[in-house]
Each structure stands twice: as C-alpha cells, then as structure tokens.
Length: 313
Ligand code: FAD
Ligand code: NAP
Image (cartoon, rainbow, N blue to C red; front, side, top):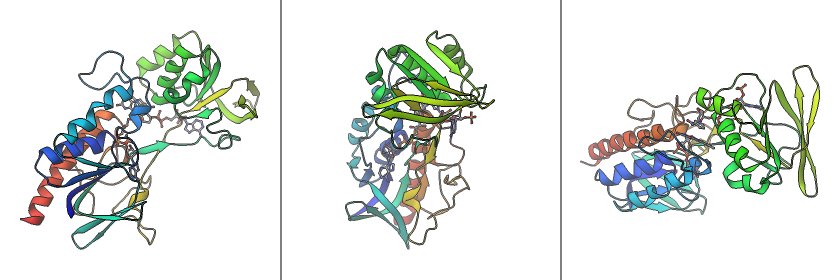
C-alpha cells in the first residue's frame, strides 16, 4: 500500500498535520512517531501561552487529547524510529529502524528539536545521575533539596520557577547578566525568594560520587571559582534541530537547508523537494512555540492535499 501522506514526528506539528490531512480527505495517512505522541512540550511543567487554555496546566495535560482527536478521523500512529526519507521519481520511501520501508506520495516532516548539552566537564558522565534536561521528569527527586539550573532562556527560567516550588533553593547559573526570556518571566524569577542568581558565570565542572552528583563548580568573569554543593543540576541551554532523517546515503540533505541545519520552506511549508513539507521547530525561522508548530502542521497538510490531488488526478 502506498500512503497518501507519511507524517514523521508526533509533536504539535505532526499531530495537527495528521488532523488536517485526514479530515481534509487524504486516505491512508500514517504518523511515524518513535515514542508517545505529544512532543517536547510534554516535558514542560507549565504552559500558559496556548490560546484558549487558561489556568495552570502542564505540557502533558495540554497534549493528552490530541492523538485521540486525530485517530477519530483515521490517522494511524506507527511507533517506530524513522532513519531516513528518500525520494525516487514521484515516490517517497520511509526507512525505519526495524528494517522495513513504507512508500508515500507525500511527506510532512516535524521531527522537532532536542536539548543541547552545555559541554562542561562531567556533564556527559553524570547525565541521568543528577544531571538532567527535564525538570518535570526529575524535579521530584530533589524535593526539599538545593539544585542548580544552567541557562538564561525561556526554558531555563520557567523550569527554575517550577523547581523553586519543589526544592529548598535554586541557583540559576547564567553566563551573562541579561536573560533571553519574556520580561514577565524574568520578573517572576527576580521576585522568587529561593532563587539565587549566579550571573556572568559558566559551569566548569559537575562532580559526584557513587550516589550521583554532589556539586557544581562555576567560574565567573573574573576567573573566580565558586563551588555550589547540590545533588541536582538541570541544563537548559537550547536545542538542536532533529534533521537526521533527511540525510541521504551520500551525506547530503534530501532538501535545501540553511547553515544551522534548519529546513528551508516557503509559506506553504513546501521544501525544495515537491511533495515534501517541513513544520515546527525544525523549519527555518521557527518561532519555537506549540501554537506555531500546530499552525505549520495545518498549513503543510493543506499543501499536501493539493499536491497529492494534482499528482494523482
Ligand atoms: P517536537 O515537539 O519536538 O516533536 C517532534 C516529535 O518528533 C517528537 O515527539 C519526537 O519523538 C519525534 N521524532 C523525532 N525524530 C524522530 C524520528 N526519527 N522518527 C520518529 N519520530 C521522531 N512552547 C510554547 O509555545 N509554550 C511554552 O510554554 C513552551 N514551553 C516549553 C518548555 C520546555 C521545557 C520545552 C523543551 C519547550 C517548550 N516550548 C514551549 C516549545 C515547544 O515545546 C516546541 O516549540 C514544540 O513542541 C515544537 O513542536 P514540533 O512538533 O515542531 O516538535
Ligand atoms: P535559548 O532561547 O536558545 O536559550 C538558551 C540559553 O542557554 C541562553 O540563555 C544561552 O545563553 C544559554 N547557553 C547556551 N549555550 C550555553 C552553554 N554552553 N553554557 C551555558 N549557557 C549556555 O533556548 P530555550 O530557552 O530552550 O528556548 C528555545 C526556544 O523555545 C526559544 O525560542 C524560546 O522562546 C522557546 N520557548 C518558549 C517558551 C514560552 O513561550 N513560554 C518556553 C520555552 C521555550 P545566552 O543568552 O548568553 O546566549
């Protein structure tokens, strides 16, 4: 069977593409998502900027109804890791980790982005043993204890606020003295008594013993080292685009990319390859928001419907 549309990634972009593609009349639409659908927002402790959703809700709460809504209109979820997307003639092939392949007339890709490592000593060795990139997942382990958060963007500040509700104290370590975050969030940080700002400072080394992390050494602008004794270090230093599935056997990308590895698209989310659409965090100039990723998914599905219609009729 040849799919009308293969969707790669089941975050807000992929799920919305699935909803619009199936409701819009495409037959045989499968969403290939390697884990549980929902995407990276399911790791967020709070989302307050999705329109129409008020009150304190977690990213997981927001995403729970999305897959069922799509499945109602016929979207199939295949839980598998896609390793590569190729195109021969008019036909795309989805290559999967289990060794099987699926052919499709069109592809909507929305594989998002993944947390970046900050690159300080001990970070890799102690990852999962006290170093974490997910406060909602791991914050509870540090209930009543002190932790450090590294980063100065929206994610670091929002997750520091979340951790400050669970932990006795949060050291917010940032390499500058200005934050890359919404002013409202910065104000909340400054008004939270158990958050100590450790500014103009970079992590030098996280260290520990058999029990896991026991401390983080940070160096300030003057070169002075401060030893912060904490059992947990949360790093939120940005994301890298998940574009591996577009890399071909010869090492080139299937479609045009920019020098940051983001997919070039037009306003219809069309890439340089006819029938291939890119959405959400992985596309050029992405606002990196749930609402915009969802919007991209809807736009891409509408473009895919027109493309498939023209191709087959
Ligand atoms: P993702 O959500 O990254 O989804 C991509 C999906 O693709 C994932 O489920 C992944 O498993 C899957 N995938 C990847 N590679 C493969 C593969 N090879 N095969 C199969 N499946 C694959 N945005 C807001 O609007 N408001 C907020 O308050 C907010 N808070 C955030 C807090 C945190 C902690 C984080 C990390 C992000 C936050 N964001 C927030 C940003 C928001 O989560 C993203 O912009 C949005 O999730 C992007 O959606 P996406 O569908 O493009 O990608
Ligand atoms: P980000 O905006 O790229 O911020 C990364 C932060 O980490 C920056 O403060 C950066 O410092 C710092 N940093 C980077 N590399 C570092 C290193 N090696 N060592 C120490 N510090 C380092 O990433 P993000 O906060 O994850 O946000 C990603 C996107 O998602 C943004 O567009 C953001 O607006 C969006 N987002 C939105 C919301 C929301 O709307 N509520 C919530 C979360 C995320 P510098 O500032 O010095 O560069």
